[in-house]
Amino acid sequence: MLKSFQFRVYPTKQQHRQLNMLLETARRLYNNALAERRDAYQNDGKTLNYYDQANKLKAKRKEDPYLAQLNFSACQDVLRRLDKAFKAFFRRVKAGEKPGYPRFKGKGRYDSITFPSYGDGCKVKDNRLYLQNVGLLKVKWHRQIEGKIKTVTIRRKVDKWFVSFSCEVEPTPLAPCSEAVGIDLGVKHLVITSDGEFYKHPKFLRDAERKLKRKQRAVSRKKKGSNRRRKAVRDLARLYQHIANQRKDYAHKVSRKLVNRYGLIAFENLNVQGMVKNHRLAKSIVDAAWNQLVQFTMYKAEEAGRRVVLVDPKNTSQLCSNCGEIVPKKLSERVHRCEHCRYVQDRDVNAAQNILKRALA
Ligand SMILES: [Zn+2]
Image 1 (cartoon, rainbow, N blue to C red):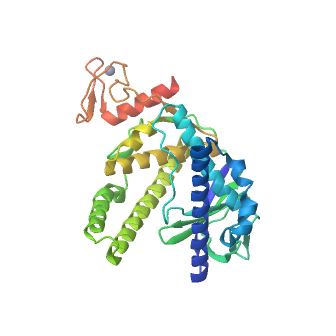
Image 2: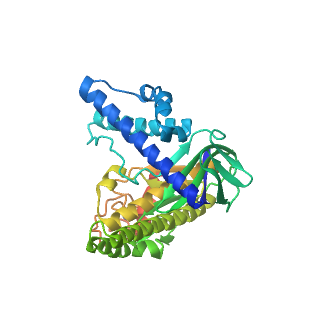
Image 3: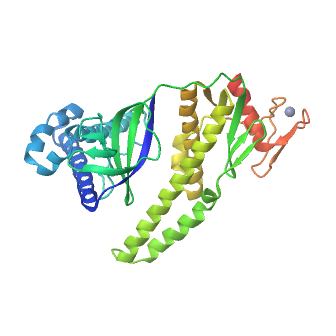
């Protein structure tokens, strides 16, 4: 299985400029290839694929000294990303969904370069990271890399640089465990378990909406194109990044606890489509936290040889987990009281118990 390891990178000023230049080159390659596909279709009714475009790379690199500086396989990766965007587009068209044609990447909106095969233009050397046409970069190795490195990605996040290594590692199974748990995902609490345990969202996430709104207002008050506005935009981006990091750390912590403790973990099968459409800020923050927790739990469970089951979410909060009768309740009713069997339980714990029952059925 693949596992990824991320580290902070500290480029020199010159390396920083060079990395930015390579990102800009990759962005240009992406946008040009996108324009090429669009024009081929509009003018000749022709659909270009990855190979059509990759075959021209060699010639293009001869003409373009900037493109020649970006590792050849990394150029191929740029075209593969575009190909993926088109495949997703065609899939949506076919499925009758709102398709959304692949978009051009605006300035600064292309922020990572992948070297698809380790050793080709990228290498760990003398405790540093070597990248072709950038040189040896200083890295803060805060943990050991495990397994065999397959790909290397250098990424810009606001004004910081990170490298991630995707590695092939042998799964390390935990001892078998017969304990099973159902998990209800909530707004006030991230996790409510069928055992009656609660994990609150961390304070920072609970405050995130208020903080983001304040920074957004700060941006909109400043004059367009002004230095103050640029600074406010950067502040806002930093805050987003900080929130994303906090959320990630917490999702790692909780998913690790769950996987160590239970042999089977059941979640509701969340409707990602429906979630993305909801633009309310607080909701989108919570949705992202849910998604990440389920994802992290799934891959940790796979590594540990434990199971995750996703169940149909229908009526999990309305059913009585004790007798199976429907007990209608409004969102404001926090306690489940069954008039059929007299079962009384916290509303979310009852839902978690239904989720577990469905997984075991
Ligand atoms: Zn009941």
